[in-house]
Image (cartoon, rainbow, N blue to C red; front, side):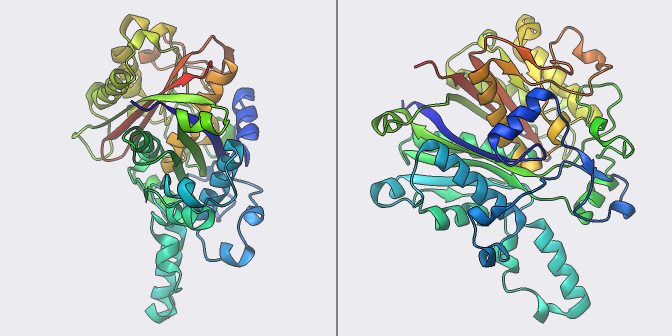
Length: 415
C-alpha cells in the first residue's frame, strides 16, 4: 500500500494569515475572537466572531479577479499557494505532474455572502440585476476549481460538503485517492467565510452560539461547565499530500505521515450527536484500524470541541470509550477556544495543528477552561497553558451537523 506524507501546509485564521503566525498564537493561548467587524452585529444575539484580519490576497490573486471571487475562494487560493510553496512545487504545474495532481477543497456553506447579497439585489431591484458571477462565486465547489485553474492541477478535483467535518473529509478522501493510485499529489483542505448577518442570525435562532458578548476572548469555552455555545469563525487550511516515493524522488521533506482515516454517520439527529458520541467512536476506531495501530499508541488528540453543551459532553464520553484505561494519558486540546468554530475549515486547520504538535512536541492549550465538565474528570485537556510531550501519534476529530463524522490519524516523521 502507498504511504502518504504531508509536504506542505497553508492556513489563514483569526490568529494570523500563515501557519507560523497561527501556530504561535495557539501555543501562546491567544484568543482571536473579537466583536464582529464584517457587519454591524446590532440585530443579532451573538455579536462576536473569529474573523480573519489584515487578509490581503493581492500577492496571489489579481485585483480584478478578486472582485469576481467570494471571500471563501480567495482563502482557498492563498492557502493553496502557501502549501505549494512549502512543498517546493512549481507556481504552475505542467505535464505528468499536473496530470497526477488533484484538489479536494471543501466548504460547509460555500459563497454564502454572495448568495445572500444577490438574493437582496433580486428582492429590491429584480432578477435581471443579479451579478453574472453570482453562481460561480456562490457554489461550494468553485474554490477547488479555481485552485486548479490558477495552479494547473489536472487530476481529481471536487469539493466535500459535510458541515463541520468538511475539511477532515477532504483530507481523508485525498489520502485514499493517492493510496489507490489515482494521483501522486493532492491538495486537500477546507475554507469558510460565513461571518454574515444571516448566518449568524440563523445559528443564533438555533441557540447554538455563545452570547458572552461582553467578553469575546473568553466566550469560546470547550469542555468548560460555563460554556454557552460556539463562536463562529472563518479561515482556511490546506495540506499537500504526496505519495512517499514521489516525495522522496523530488527531494521533498515530509512534515508528517497520514496513516488512518475513518468516516461514519450517526443516523441519529440533524444537529445533536448520537448518545455517548458513538458515531465518533466508530470513526476513530476505523481510522486506527486502517492505521494498523492500537488506541493505546495515541498520545495526542485534537478534539472537535465546539463549546456547545451537548456536543462537548458527547465527545468526552467518546474519548473515554475510544481509549479506555489509556484515556488519561492522551493530551487533548481544543483549538476552537482560540480560533472560534471555522465550520468547513475546522478539520483542515486542526489537522495542521496536530502536525505542528507532532513536529514540536508542544500541545496548545484549551483556553478558558476553569470549571471542567464533570465528564472530563481525570482527562488531560491541556487547560490554559501549552504542554510539552513526546508525541508520535495524533488524532484529529471532526463532526458535522447531519451526524457526519471523520477521524484522521497522523504519525510524526522520523526519517
